[in-house]
Image 1 (cartoon, rainbow, N blue to C red):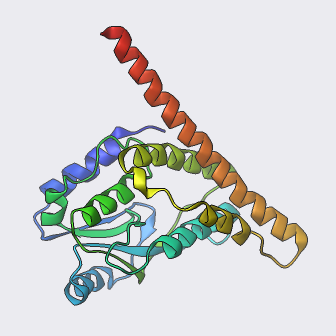
Image 2: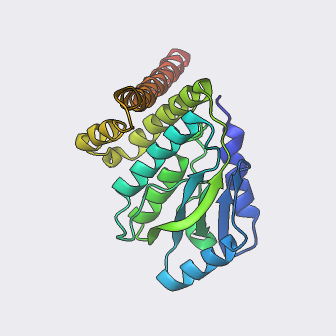
Length: 231
């Protein structure tokens, strides 16, 4: 559901924090004992300003959690090239220098749905000349028990977040061949039935994202019409 308090809380907590490096995760994630030390070491070793890590599905008994993780893994591998402009980061495993966070204005509070606010932050940091790095070996466990309904709702929210991201960062759309590659990545499994099931699951996720994207567009259009009527 729409929850503007989430991004407001992230932003307020970051501004109030006293440390030089801000670290973010989620309440359904478990981090290894050396996680903070590894983040500090990476900031020193590679001289980055914004750092993101990978997630690992810790709920292997949930099929839809596996599918969700495979999609995240795909985009992180496809879009993060290691050129200090790795912009596909997730806020459940992310750290940023506080000075950088303040300089670029922090999280955009218009993201009232989960999804998009982390990539928006990374894109703005890279555009401002800051070094943005994805560390594939900085891994946390994601305990998201995702059912069919939760999967559809989550990806619909991602679609709404993607609309806002595209409207604010119009040059961020991945090339169409990557979407086709994602779809056919789903064509795997020991049997034809398994391959068809996995392919359909990926297709469903993209359909939900399209629906969420359209919902975001219609919502903005409705607000603009009401604003015009008031004027």
